[in-house]
Length: 199
Image 1 (spheres, rainbow, N blue to C red):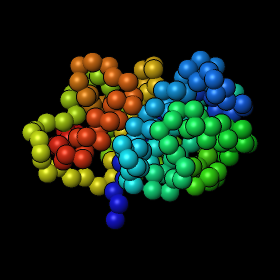
Image 2 (image 1 turned 90 degrees about the vertical axis):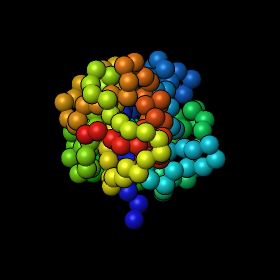
Image 3 (image 1 turned 180 degrees about the horizontal axis):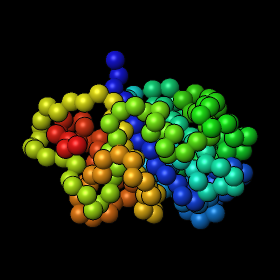
Image 4 (image 1 turned 60 degrees about the vertical axis):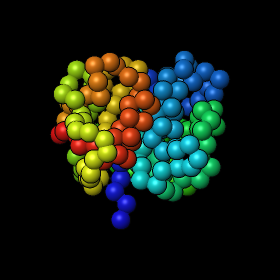
């Protein structure tokens, strides 16, 4: 049985529908570049893809209601470490009509499109949830290597703005504010090495 590592990132300005400007991911697309880098850090290794990750983008940039795009790593096909190519996959999704809240439609292998927000996503997870924020107790303790193990676990983080949610247990990866994709890489390292997580 595969125990999932779940990540959700909230894109406060990320486009939820329309034609995604592939040449302006950091501007006109609403900092979609931040979400894409987080996605790639969550699912890709140097020479392949992790098989235990579920990554959800919460797109709040409109127009219209919030949209979710979920990537299930062990089902994905044709995802490579190239930001523009990943953006093309997202562009294909958001040009389609948005599904109703709580419904998922598989747009391509391992990529699901749905209406809904962060709260709905966390309710669906049904596992311990860590909310990453710098001004919180440290997430980890102990030495390397260790033998900490956990079943499914979820992490939520924001884009380039502060995450406005009280859900989950607030924990920090250090005193400095880090970019989302860096946080995800650190979390994978901690879990891969069995470092004790404090929650």
